[in-house]
Image (cartoon, rainbow, N blue to C red; front, top):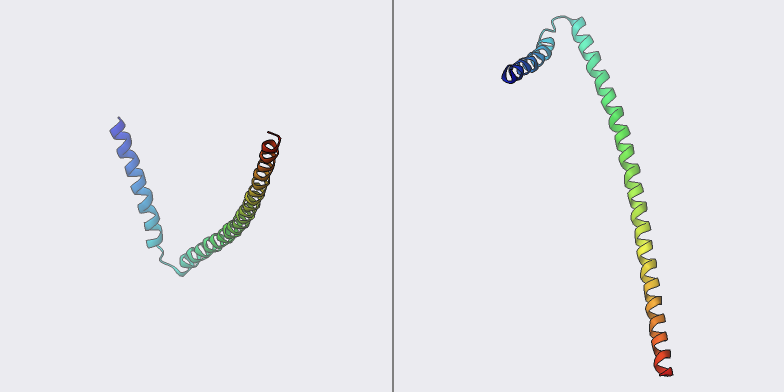
Length: 101
């Protein structure tokens, strides 16, 4: 029964693919061609709008990523400065301790 179900699904998939091809191949009149062209142009416009939205989203994401990278570099620099100050403090305290000893 699994094999039968698999074969039935393959037949349905093949039939759907053939139907789409037949629909385009069966355009015989100018009216049908105009309708098909109108549909395709609508799909093109829809795709262009979606592409524009995705492009805008990509640019916003890139700007956001750039901002985060800048913040990260600033934080790393600040951490390095704090670490240097801390090391200097340790040296001063060690020197004071040595003088006391």
